[in-house]
Length: 99
Image 1 (tube, rainbow, N blue to C red):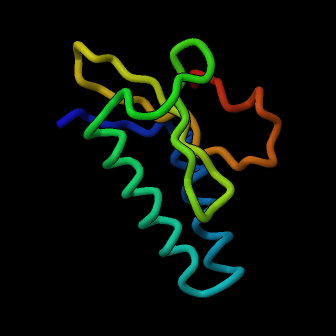
Image 2: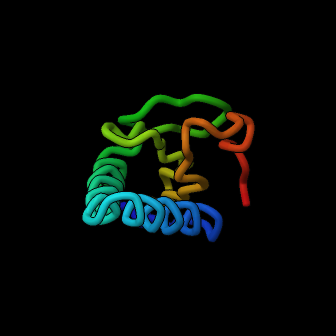
């Protein structure tokens, strides 16, 4: 299986979103985490499944939550780099950052 790495910012976005959801409604944060984890597994199992949006960045939309996972991959190294767990209300330009 392909290795997957969330950059520090993406991991912080993920954790912050899960915490915020949990504060809004108990159990919602756990549901968000489970949904993200399922989507990450889908990315790992098929690197090119989700559409390319800008340059080499791909986006996997999270259904049921206003988020998308933004990632790049290196097919030869079998590695995936998640650069954002992005809320849809943020400025779209912020999605495509490399660090």
